[in-house]
Image (cartoon, rainbow, N blue to C red):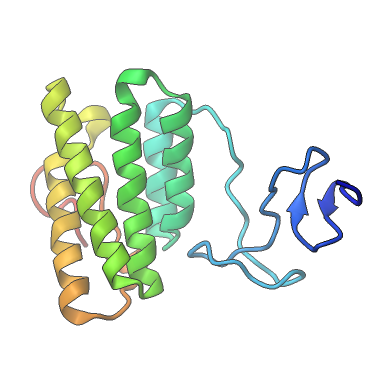
Length: 179
């Protein structure tokens, strides 16, 4: 392919020198692409290997800031770089974060579906591993939060405030998951 360099190709797509997508467009806080040249929020660097506690803390900070799309990227890094036996956990948490993203964007059907899928994934992982509270996260409570939010967005049919509806990933007892 001719015309490929670091940046945009002749057809206007972001590609690296190998022709792979770079996704360099600026994004808003919910991960939606903005026009080139617009001020977006800082992107999460991809491919970062973090300790599990650091993953949870960084994802929580992003959730608290109303940036579940970015929290999803942090969980995705853990899913791709972590030990094989934990991939289901991190993938499920990524699904919860992207479900909240869709619910906040107003895609209530897709958001509810992903929230339920993520809830099922973290519950299944906990059941299979016998670890209901990995890294301080109460997985059963997270699953309950996700299903309640899914039901609520389907009933209301409107977007939610991602920061206000974000879960607390760690804590003890009921009430630590929702705000």
